Length: 132
Ligand SMILES: Cc1cc2nc3c(=O)[nH]c(=O)nc-3n(C[C@H](O)[C@H](O)[C@H](O)COP(=O)(O)O)c2cc1C
Image 1 (cartoon, rainbow, N blue to C red):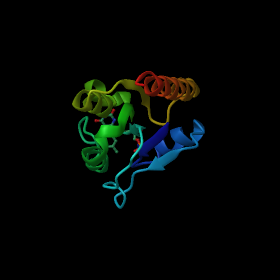
Image 2: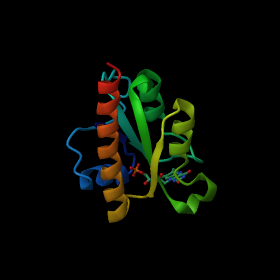
Image 3: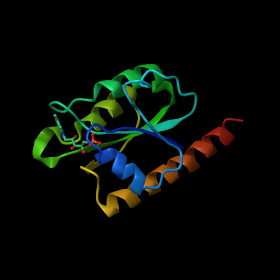
Image 4: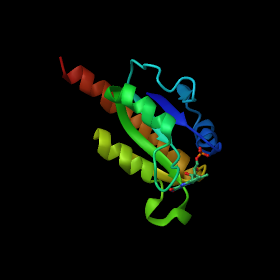
């Protein structure tokens, strides 16, 4: 499964590197309206007061049909708004919130994420087979 991420200060980028995701794509200001024709998971930090970063919003406006799940980073210092971008995307596009993690994540967070991406791969394959 493709993992598409946005990172404004580098935490999510570091998390994705540690998870050794082979099919990863970083959203930038210049590619954030590109069309992606395959299923993907999005991983993003949270900005403002619990907001989804603008490039991620733009990207999802164009590509939400292929969105399979979301994971979000944040900082617990933000209290109720901790990693709220994840909840917002999950509710707006009706996809599972796979996990929230703090900053660049713990080793356990990385393992959990890899497992969840693996499970989504399996389930997605099965859905395709069952639809015949
Ligand atoms: C201006 C600014 C606003 C932020 N607002 C929030 C917030 O509302 N909720 C939250 O959980 N984290 C917030 N954070 C923390 C980031 O989401 C967190 O550091 C995250 O790991 C950033 O990921 P990135 O480095 O990949 O961009 C904020 C950080 C900055 C710099």
